[in-house]
Length: 283
Length: 277
Image (cartoon, rainbow over all chains, first blue to last red; front, side, top):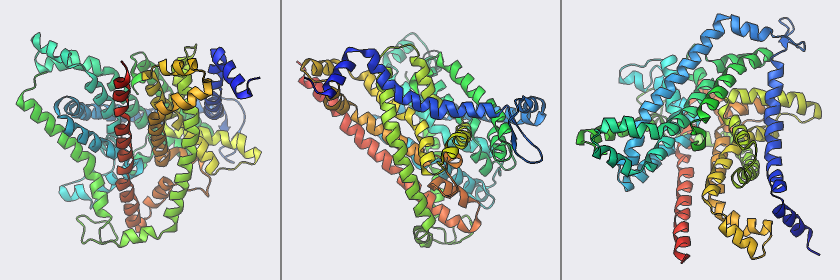
């Protein structure tokens, strides 16, 4: 008579369906209960309202929050500003990361490359708040930039620069990986066929690193889209969607929930659009 | 691609400038933690070690650090188990909805932290609070684990995709059952990926502030929450500088560990190849 463990192992071995179910049930249960469940609670609460006088939630189904969201020009301005900042950060990071990744992957010698990779990844571990704080120190009046000749102060430029700084390694690393895997023969073939470096870059390199560029942009775009702490610290009076949500959480949760749908729709839409290119596989 | 001397120089310059931008702000914080004046002033008027000893003696910092470590360990443990199970399911099986599973795994980290945070907050309040489970370390661990699963999943899946199933088949042919094969053959082969995933999960949890804000009770303070609470207090400036500097210096540790892991992992394929006829 085989032991119960061996019998269970045998059953799992013979039936792949059972094995799959056993492997999937715990992670899916966690994500469905803890995460999708939470998101559902949040979405449902967007259809309730808060009493203006008592600040109590009234559990009556209505779409007042969404109507307010669409009709109030303030929300439209904040949403557009947020989108512009997220796109700006993504473009800035792509422009900064491409030459660095190219140098690391294709120009630097292997000993230098190892050293540079360490140098690039180490600041990634320093922590979100530490890095935002560092920029607060740099940008503040009486700070280093002021001493060097003038600080832009706290506002939208400070937010874009700080966010681009925060997420740069997330753009750099996928680009580096893609460029390092690029077969050298492609570049040689392109050169043999008479393409100048610039043409090779545009017609050979960029199409191949496109999935990596998009993978990096998933991070830079969605992380910027939802940020509110960086804006609080270096944004001055600037508001992004995240700030509107954060400001309403305690006093008007239904409104905060309705506003949350904006970044959720944007990010999910972006993920679905990017998924077709295979970018999510290289995350 | 044959690059001209000028193009190479331009690329080298861009890389050097990029690195300078990456390090300059961190360097300023580091120098500032030794700044003798209490109120922030650049350039420093003199250098002192007294803020470092003041920070060391601050109980709030030590308590927050300990809370962060416990939350990180808890979230990492949950993420390791669930992420590994999901990785095995997604790489070793073909099934309907596989894309949906990976999408569901990415979602908690792709959606803005504030949405994840307030969703968990609303759910905990409606479900857990009536059951008598209050906000605290437990809810923080649940929140962190939710977005840490994906990093373990990514690392382990990447390793599993490259791992041929032949050694597992051989193990089964030699009479080992599913669990023995997992324990003696598969687990040692994915150990490096598990470690890398755990390291990333812990770092992610240790650094998280937004989800923590909405899932920690009033009595639970992690290190990022402590830093944020003290950013606004002018007389705490030097201590915040020291804590930030300590974290900057500590960031070399995971890089070193990851480097050691990759050195340990590199020779393995070579030896395996050498043994094959």
